[in-house]
Image (tube, rainbow, N blue to C red; front, side, top):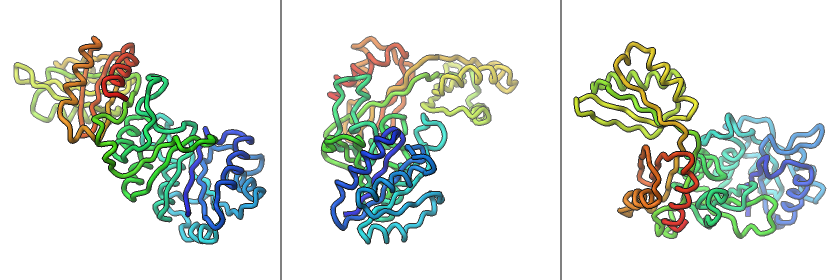
Length: 360
C-alpha cells in the first residue's frame, strides 16, 4: 500500500533524529510497498547535502531503493516519475519548501501542503509526522485535561487551523477535503502511533458533540469607530483605509445608534490598533467620528460541526461566561464556530470553564 509521509523541522532537527526516521521508515515498510517522504527544506541536512539527500542516504544504508526529488516548483512536480518509483516498490524523498511567511500565519503553505497534493495525485493517504502525538480538543498547556481526538472532520480541522490552533496548515486541510485525502497526524519518533488523529470526512462520532475543540489567539484589539454616517460610503472609506494600512480584520459588526448614525467594530492584531486610531484621527473624512480601542485581548473560538444541528450552544457559552464572571467584549459566529474576545488575564480561566462545560 502506497503512502505519503511528511516530516517537518521540529521532528527532524538533528543527525540522530534523521537516522532514527530512516531506520523507522525502513522497518515499517512492507516488501513491494511504494513510499513518498516529503521533508521541509528546514529539516536537518548533513554537510554538503540537502535534507532530502540526507534522508535518502540513510534509507539506502537500510537497504531501501530511494530516489531524490528536489528543487522543483511545488505547483508542477513530476507526478509520473513519483508513480514509477511507487510502482517499483521503492521510496521517493521529496524536499518541499519551508513554511512560507510568518510561522504564526494560519494560512501558510509549505511542505505539508505539497505532501497533500502529492497524495491526492497518487490516490493514497497522507501521514503528517510532527512533534505532537495527536490533535487535542484544547491546547494541553492551557487545559491539562484536554482529550485526544481520534477523529476530526475536515471542517473542524480547517476552522481550528485557520484560527491558529493545531499541528496542520489550513491550506493542507482544505486540499485534503477537496480531494478526499485521509490525513493521519502523530508524533514522528513515538513508538506508539495508535494515539494519533485521523482527519477525514464527516463522522457521526463528531456530530454527537456540540463542540469539538477550542482555539485561542493572543494580543488582539477591538476597534470601534462610532458616530459614522450610515450611508455605506463611510464604511467603504473605513475599510479602504484598513486595506491601505494592511490591517487584517476579523469579527466585524455594525450597530445603529439612536440618532440614526452607526458604529462599526472589528478585531485586529494588537499592534495595529494604535496606528489605525492615529490614521483615522488625522484623516479629514473621519472628522467627528469617535475611535475607541479595547486592547490586550485574547480571542477564544469554540469549534464543532455539531453546532450546525444543535440549538442552545450560544446560550450555554454566555451562561458559562456569567458563572465564571468573565466579561466578553465582542462575539461572532459561523455555522460551526463561536468566537469571542476576553481580557488576556481571563484567557486560561475561560478556556478551563469552556473545557469543563463542553466536556473537552
